[in-house]
Image (cartoon, rainbow, N blue to C red; front, side, top):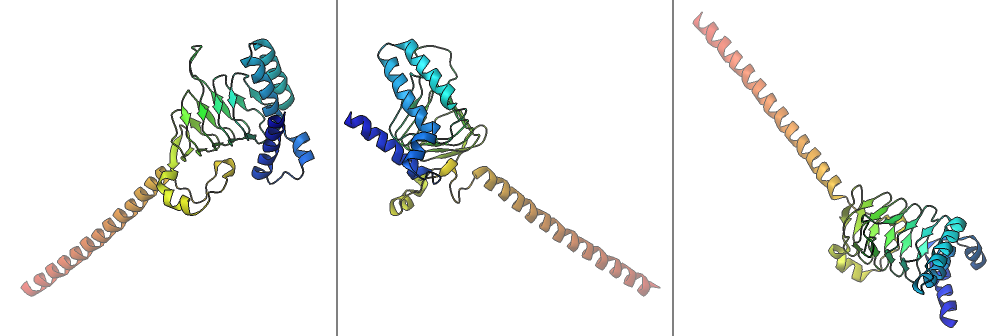
Length: 246
Protein backbone atom coordinates (compact mmCIF):
# COMPACT_ATOMS: atom_id res chain seq x y z
CA UNK A 1 0.00 0.00 0.00
CA UNK A 2 2.72 2.57 0.84
CA UNK A 3 4.34 1.84 -2.54
CA UNK A 4 1.02 2.37 -4.32
CA UNK A 5 0.44 5.73 -2.63
CA UNK A 6 4.03 6.73 -3.38
CA UNK A 7 3.43 5.93 -7.05
CA UNK A 8 0.22 7.98 -7.06
CA UNK A 9 2.08 10.91 -5.52
CA UNK A 10 4.84 10.58 -8.13
CA UNK A 11 2.28 10.59 -10.95
CA UNK A 12 0.62 13.74 -9.64
CA UNK A 13 3.96 15.51 -9.12
CA UNK A 14 5.02 14.63 -12.68
CA UNK A 15 1.94 16.44 -14.00
CA UNK A 16 2.82 19.62 -12.11
CA UNK A 17 6.41 19.46 -13.39
CA UNK A 18 5.44 19.07 -17.05
CA UNK A 19 2.17 20.94 -17.43
CA UNK A 20 2.02 24.63 -16.41
CA UNK A 21 -1.78 24.51 -16.80
CA UNK A 22 -2.13 22.28 -13.72
CA UNK A 23 -3.34 24.40 -10.79
CA UNK A 24 -4.33 22.05 -7.98
CA UNK A 25 -4.07 18.43 -6.92
CA UNK A 26 -7.86 18.09 -7.06
CA UNK A 27 -7.87 19.33 -10.64
CA UNK A 28 -5.16 16.84 -11.61
CA UNK A 29 -6.97 13.96 -9.89
CA UNK A 30 -10.31 14.68 -11.55
CA UNK A 31 -9.57 16.32 -14.91
CA UNK A 32 -6.50 14.61 -16.39
CA UNK A 33 -7.50 11.63 -18.59
CA UNK A 34 -3.86 10.73 -19.19
CA UNK A 35 -3.43 10.11 -15.48
CA UNK A 36 -6.62 8.05 -15.34
CA UNK A 37 -5.47 6.01 -18.36
CA UNK A 38 -2.17 5.12 -16.67
CA UNK A 39 -3.93 4.07 -13.48
CA UNK A 40 -6.50 1.97 -15.35
CA UNK A 41 -3.70 0.37 -17.36
CA UNK A 42 -1.91 -0.69 -14.19
CA UNK A 43 -5.00 -2.60 -13.14
CA UNK A 44 -5.47 -4.08 -16.63
CA UNK A 45 -1.78 -5.06 -16.78
CA UNK A 46 -2.06 -6.81 -13.40
CA UNK A 47 -4.97 -8.86 -14.70
CA UNK A 48 -3.04 -9.64 -17.89
CA UNK A 49 0.15 -10.79 -16.15
CA UNK A 50 -1.87 -12.99 -13.77
CA UNK A 51 -3.56 -14.90 -16.58
CA UNK A 52 -6.86 -13.02 -16.54
CA UNK A 53 -6.52 -12.06 -20.20
CA UNK A 54 -10.16 -11.28 -20.98
CA UNK A 55 -10.54 -9.22 -17.82
CA UNK A 56 -7.37 -7.33 -18.72
CA UNK A 57 -8.67 -6.57 -22.21
CA UNK A 58 -12.09 -5.57 -20.86
CA UNK A 59 -10.52 -3.23 -18.31
CA UNK A 60 -8.39 -1.72 -21.08
CA UNK A 61 -11.50 -1.31 -23.22
CA UNK A 62 -13.28 0.53 -20.39
CA UNK A 63 -10.24 2.78 -20.02
CA UNK A 64 -10.36 3.55 -23.74
CA UNK A 65 -14.06 4.39 -23.51
CA UNK A 66 -13.54 6.66 -20.49
CA UNK A 67 -10.36 8.46 -21.59
CA UNK A 68 -10.00 8.08 -25.38
CA UNK A 69 -6.60 6.48 -24.72
CA UNK A 70 -6.00 2.87 -25.81
CA UNK A 71 -3.21 1.00 -24.01
CA UNK A 72 -3.03 -2.75 -24.52
CA UNK A 73 -2.91 -4.54 -21.14
CA UNK A 74 0.21 -6.37 -22.25
CA UNK A 75 2.18 -3.13 -22.70
CA UNK A 76 4.69 -2.15 -20.02
CA UNK A 77 4.44 1.40 -18.65
CA UNK A 78 7.08 2.78 -16.31
CA UNK A 79 6.85 5.24 -13.43
CA UNK A 80 6.03 8.94 -13.71
CA UNK A 81 4.79 8.55 -17.29
CA UNK A 82 2.78 11.63 -18.27
CA UNK A 83 0.18 11.46 -21.03
CA UNK A 84 -0.81 15.03 -21.89
CA UNK A 85 -4.27 15.41 -23.47
CA UNK A 86 -3.88 11.90 -24.88
CA UNK A 87 -6.98 11.60 -27.06
CA UNK A 88 -6.33 9.07 -29.84
CA UNK A 89 -3.20 7.61 -28.25
CA UNK A 90 -2.65 3.93 -29.15
CA UNK A 91 -0.07 1.71 -27.42
CA UNK A 92 0.43 -1.82 -28.73
CA UNK A 93 0.79 -5.10 -26.88
CA UNK A 94 4.59 -5.44 -26.83
CA UNK A 95 5.33 -1.73 -26.41
CA UNK A 96 7.42 -0.62 -23.43
CA UNK A 97 7.40 2.92 -22.05
CA UNK A 98 10.26 3.88 -19.74
CA UNK A 99 10.21 6.03 -16.64
CA UNK A 100 9.56 9.79 -16.95
CA UNK A 101 8.34 9.62 -20.56
CA UNK A 102 5.92 12.21 -21.92
CA UNK A 103 3.44 11.34 -24.67
CA UNK A 104 0.98 13.66 -26.36
CA UNK A 105 -2.31 13.18 -28.20
CA UNK A 106 -2.64 11.19 -31.40
CA UNK A 107 0.54 9.16 -30.90
CA UNK A 108 0.77 5.56 -32.11
CA UNK A 109 3.29 3.10 -30.70
CA UNK A 110 2.49 0.47 -33.31
CA UNK A 111 3.78 -2.74 -34.79
CA UNK A 112 4.70 -3.71 -38.32
CA UNK A 113 4.70 -7.50 -37.87
CA UNK A 114 1.81 -9.96 -37.67
CA UNK A 115 3.76 -12.73 -35.91
CA UNK A 116 2.64 -13.50 -32.37
CA UNK A 117 5.23 -13.86 -29.67
CA UNK A 118 7.65 -11.44 -31.31
CA UNK A 119 8.63 -7.93 -30.29
CA UNK A 120 6.38 -5.96 -32.64
CA UNK A 121 6.12 -2.60 -30.93
CA UNK A 122 8.72 0.00 -29.91
CA UNK A 123 10.51 0.44 -26.60
CA UNK A 124 10.85 3.99 -25.23
CA UNK A 125 13.80 4.61 -22.95
CA UNK A 126 13.75 6.90 -19.94
CA UNK A 127 12.67 10.52 -20.38
CA UNK A 128 11.55 10.19 -24.01
CA UNK A 129 9.16 12.84 -25.39
CA UNK A 130 6.80 11.75 -28.18
CA UNK A 131 4.93 14.71 -29.63
CA UNK A 132 1.39 15.02 -30.95
CA UNK A 133 0.51 12.85 -33.93
CA UNK A 134 3.84 11.00 -34.08
CA UNK A 135 3.91 7.37 -35.24
CA UNK A 136 6.63 5.10 -33.88
CA UNK A 137 6.29 1.81 -35.75
CA UNK A 138 8.33 -1.32 -35.18
CA UNK A 139 10.07 -3.34 -32.49
CA UNK A 140 13.10 -1.08 -32.03
CA UNK A 141 14.53 1.11 -29.27
CA UNK A 142 14.06 4.85 -28.84
CA UNK A 143 16.99 5.83 -26.64
CA UNK A 144 16.90 7.61 -23.30
CA UNK A 145 16.10 11.31 -23.53
CA UNK A 146 15.19 11.19 -27.23
CA UNK A 147 12.54 13.52 -28.65
CA UNK A 148 10.13 12.70 -31.47
CA UNK A 149 8.64 15.75 -33.20
CA UNK A 150 4.98 16.26 -34.00
CA UNK A 151 3.63 14.08 -36.84
CA UNK A 152 6.99 12.36 -37.34
CA UNK A 153 6.96 8.76 -38.61
CA UNK A 154 9.80 6.83 -36.97
CA UNK A 155 10.67 3.50 -38.57
CA UNK A 156 14.11 2.73 -37.15
CA UNK A 157 16.11 2.91 -33.95
CA UNK A 158 16.73 6.33 -32.39
CA UNK A 159 19.96 6.91 -30.43
CA UNK A 160 19.83 8.37 -26.90
CA UNK A 161 19.31 12.12 -26.76
CA UNK A 162 18.48 12.49 -30.45
CA UNK A 163 15.67 14.62 -31.86
CA UNK A 164 13.72 13.10 -34.75
CA UNK A 165 11.42 14.96 -37.15
CA UNK A 166 9.81 14.43 -40.54
CA UNK A 167 8.41 11.61 -42.69
CA UNK A 168 10.23 9.30 -42.55
CA UNK A 169 11.85 10.41 -39.30
CA UNK A 170 15.35 11.86 -39.52
CA UNK A 171 17.71 12.93 -36.76
CA UNK A 172 18.24 16.67 -36.47
CA UNK A 173 20.09 16.78 -33.18
CA UNK A 174 22.07 14.43 -30.96
CA UNK A 175 22.84 15.30 -27.37
CA UNK A 176 26.16 13.50 -27.65
CA UNK A 177 27.41 16.37 -29.80
CA UNK A 178 26.55 18.76 -27.00
CA UNK A 179 27.80 16.60 -24.14
CA UNK A 180 30.10 19.24 -22.68
CA UNK A 181 27.32 21.81 -22.72
CA UNK A 182 24.85 19.39 -21.17
CA UNK A 183 27.25 18.68 -18.30
CA UNK A 184 27.51 22.37 -17.48
CA UNK A 185 23.80 23.18 -17.54
CA UNK A 186 20.71 21.16 -16.74
CA UNK A 187 18.64 20.37 -19.80
CA UNK A 188 15.08 21.74 -19.79
CA UNK A 189 11.96 19.72 -20.53
CA UNK A 190 11.08 20.02 -24.22
CA UNK A 191 7.31 20.27 -24.54
CA UNK A 192 6.06 18.69 -27.78
CA UNK A 193 9.67 17.74 -28.52
CA UNK A 194 10.50 21.31 -29.53
CA UNK A 195 14.16 22.10 -28.87
CA UNK A 196 15.42 25.71 -28.85
CA UNK A 197 17.90 26.53 -31.61
CA UNK A 198 17.64 23.06 -33.17
CA UNK A 199 18.93 22.88 -36.74
CA UNK A 200 17.76 20.57 -39.49
CA UNK A 201 20.75 19.25 -41.51
CA UNK A 202 18.58 18.97 -44.63
CA UNK A 203 17.53 22.60 -44.30
CA UNK A 204 21.16 23.61 -43.75
CA UNK A 205 22.21 21.69 -46.87
CA UNK A 206 19.49 23.34 -48.97
CA UNK A 207 20.47 26.74 -47.62
CA UNK A 208 24.11 26.16 -48.53
CA UNK A 209 23.04 25.11 -52.05
CA UNK A 210 20.98 28.29 -52.40
CA UNK A 211 23.94 30.40 -51.24
CA UNK A 212 26.26 28.57 -53.64
CA UNK A 213 23.82 29.18 -56.50
CA UNK A 214 23.76 32.89 -55.64
CA UNK A 215 27.57 32.99 -55.69
CA UNK A 216 27.63 31.28 -59.10
CA UNK A 217 25.03 33.72 -60.38
CA UNK A 218 27.12 36.66 -59.22
CA UNK A 219 30.25 35.16 -60.80
CA UNK A 220 28.47 34.60 -64.11
CA UNK A 221 27.09 38.16 -64.01
CA UNK A 222 30.61 39.54 -63.38
CA UNK A 223 32.06 37.50 -66.27
CA UNK A 224 29.25 38.64 -68.55
CA UNK A 225 29.96 42.26 -67.66
CA UNK A 226 33.68 41.79 -68.38
CA UNK A 227 32.90 40.19 -71.75
CA UNK A 228 30.62 43.10 -72.62
CA UNK A 229 33.35 45.61 -71.78
CA UNK A 230 35.93 43.67 -73.79
CA UNK A 231 33.58 43.60 -76.80
CA UNK A 232 33.00 47.35 -76.50
CA UNK A 233 36.74 47.97 -76.27
CA UNK A 234 37.36 45.74 -79.30
CA UNK A 235 34.70 47.62 -81.28
CA UNK A 236 36.25 51.00 -80.40
CA UNK A 237 39.70 49.74 -81.36
CA UNK A 238 38.41 48.49 -84.72
CA UNK A 239 36.67 51.80 -85.41
CA UNK A 240 39.82 53.77 -84.64
CA UNK A 241 41.88 51.54 -86.94
CA UNK A 242 39.37 52.05 -89.77
CA UNK A 243 39.45 55.80 -89.32
CA UNK A 244 43.25 55.74 -89.35
CA UNK A 245 43.27 53.81 -92.63
CA UNK A 246 40.89 56.29 -94.24
